[in-house]
Length: 161
Image (tube, rainbow, N blue to C red; front, top):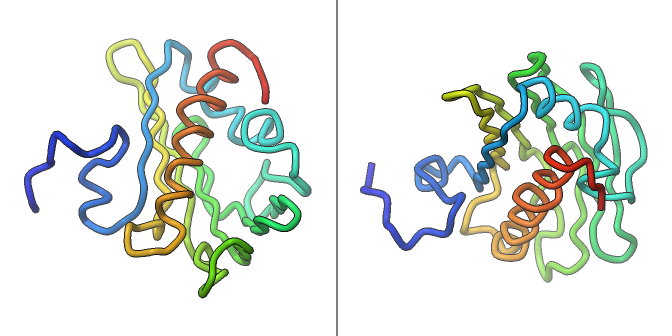
């Protein structure tokens, strides 16, 4: 594997260079349960209010739709309480792309929660969201904001979007 460049944006770590996808990591002074539960129960408070469905138990499905811009349907395919959650994007339509508007379809959103040195680290990886995709630049900026600002602020301060 190539040595990590110091010029990579924060969040772009070795997983991305291996082609797995975009990664963003946050560190919180909260318990693993306090970090994990909003991923299941509070999606409209930290990601988007354009949310329909459920994501509390295995095989639950939900839709995120920003009319005229973004549609995606996710299925909860893995839940390890207080440790890991995985959503599979089963359908997508990114209206603003010129060619393949379904670039998110069959990608996965993986949340991993680990306790380290009295703090809890949340690593988010959008597997399949790689630099060669047309949506990468815009989506990686969006994920940085959603994870590092909105989710972080919600978990830390209880402040929703």
